[in-house]
Image (tube, rainbow, N blue to C red; front, side):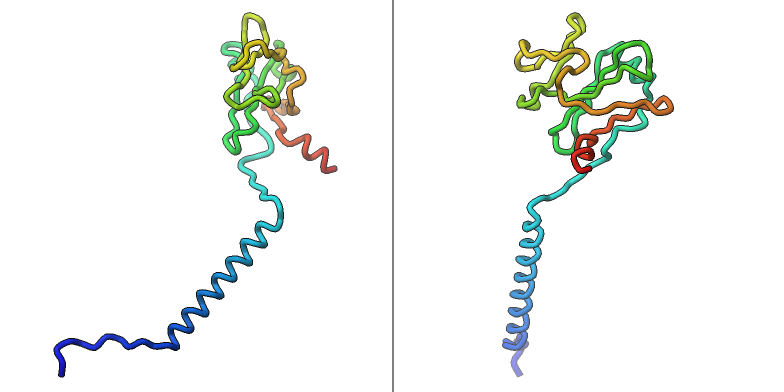
Amino acid sequence: MSPVAQGQTFDPRRAVIFGVAAVALGIGLVVLVTRLAGTGTIDVQLGDDRFQEIDAASLSEEIDADGPVLFPDAGTGERDIIIQHLGDDDETGWFAFNAQIPGRPRECSLVFDTARQVFFDRCDGSLTVPADGGDQPSYPVTVIDGDLEVDLNAAEREEAE
């Protein structure tokens, strides 16, 4: 008897079974990826379609004291918005619009000039937008029971109808 223990011998049946299983797994992954990629779109949705339950009176006071509020897009970073309130009535005078002039990069977001009561492009101060957002892409704002609601996808829903 040898003091060295014998190792397992090569079993060709196990090798073939392992090889067939690996090939089947690989084919399954290729089929899965092909099906997922074949849809043409990937629909990712983070968060709600609406900003809700923001106390209109509190936000109005904040805007009166510090100016319009920028809400950065935490999802894709493509739809930062500004919420503006004009007037003395907490129920009316609300505006929500894109924080960048169309075609401008994200770092060139609009900044409010309180002295002139206009927004200007952070990268090019000659580009201005009126205090109500003017022609900026905008979003419907309603006040329901004292809470502000901004509907971020109203335009997409109207197109689908």
